[in-house]
Length: 168
Image: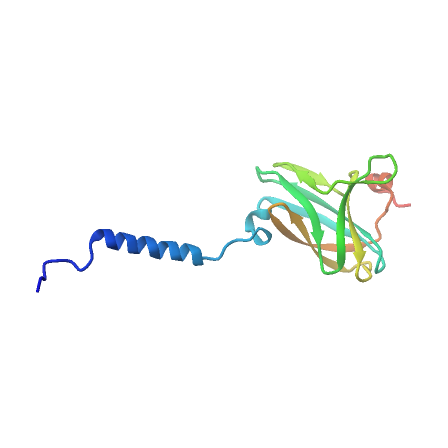
């Protein structure tokens, strides 16, 4: 017998270690875009409210968002089991609002949908949104989602009154 010879060369062991590492990487869970934890790192959302409305109608979502991260974030929609869709709109002052499709918030900037010409309309409510309820929603971003809870209120609907806080 030849006891002085190793059963495997160092090159074989190196290949085996590489193969094990490759298999481990392929089997590791992959972060999907809709669950990416960095989707909302540095983002603060406050004053989340929706307009009370009946089933089948539309409602307006309002909130204040601060993007303290260095990267821009883009809102492309809102999801919930309680509605059929959402539209991101801008009131230009010339008739009907314009459907934007998305809203971008640059890094280290703030967007206040409580007092701006921008709004998010929740469409096709599947049930009544009653005053003082809390409605679970998800803001859909290009790079993930942010779960939010919106308080249902009787909000003023006129843009000017909304900016001044005067109810009519």
